[in-house]
Picture 1 (cartoon, helix red, strand yellow):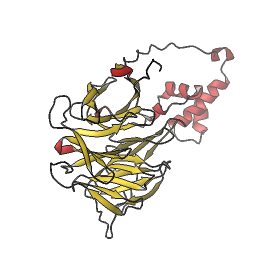
Picture 2: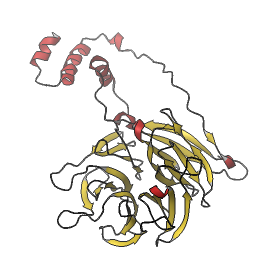
Picture 3: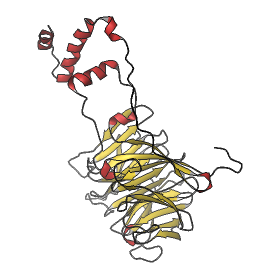
Amino acid sequence: MVQAVLARCPVRTVRARFCVCLAVALSLWTPGYASKVKVEKNLPPPPPDLLLEGGRKLAFDRIFETDRDVGGKRGFFTKVLDVIIGAPDRHRMIRPYGVAINSRGTAMVTDPGAMGVHIFDFAQHKYRFVKRRDKDENSLTAPQCVAVDREDNFYVTDSETGRIFVFDANGKFKRNIGSLKGGEGYFKRPTGIAVDSAAQRIYVSDTLRNKVYVMDMQGSVLQTIGKAGSEPGEFNFPTEIVLHGQDVAVVDAMNFRVQVFDRNGGFEYAVGGVGDDLGSFFRPKGIGFDSEGHLYVVDGAWDRVQVFDRLGDLLYYFGTEGSEPWAFALPSGIFIDRNDTVYVVDSYNSRVQVFRYFGKRPEGGGQ
């Protein structure tokens, strides 16, 4: 009977044919078999918190890596299909690099390995993958860093085409920045990006030009910061950028440090230096600030994140080589939201790890 139904079914996909088959089977199913069965899951205990000075702590929250991690309940009918013919192919990250979180808690993760951007909408339990393949110069081929504005538009640097791609909150392409007449771009290799919506400014590091461009929202250059060199205020392959208050922090990759400037481009301070000891860097990547003004620096070579104060003193670090929670394999981007949720792109583990920072407790205790 089931075979006859499948033979007459006009639906061509295997999964859809099994839907018809299962519908027939369920229509004949004795109600008694539909009783709920409670399945006990033996989940591993969460990893311990990292306890810090002054009652502070850093706690592991979760990991996301595929479209299934946006959550949402899966119906009984879908679960039965998964058992019969196998779960559908998952959309997963390949070689993620940068991450940014918008006002709704949606995560945008750039993925040069997949030549696109993963959008994890946890509030709506939806996943989207954004790519752009054009015959002209508007193709997104090597997405690097990502930033969001107050309207939740997101901006993606493309190190191969030398442009910035702008999408709306739903992933619809709006425009690109950096194009000149004739198809050339004025960026050689745009990498880091940050958006100041209040001042209507975009900050972009050009790694091969050893400078940071300050532009208006239309992409007109207003100012540049830095030049090639190793002195304070000079760069040797600048990469990631983050804004915090009136500070502009820039990863000065091949000088193995992070430099911090004011909004006029004036040098303020630097942290790091080449080495494999704590407080030094070998492959500095993503940077971010928590609510207490502590600077977080990802080191891709040493698989750790180091945290500094404004004096350049190391406060603490976390991470080691591996694939377990708290362990990394060539980590890259980092984003810290207004609630001190810390997102770290664990690139070669093809995932993002999420932590929660809890700042200094007030005098007299409290949470």
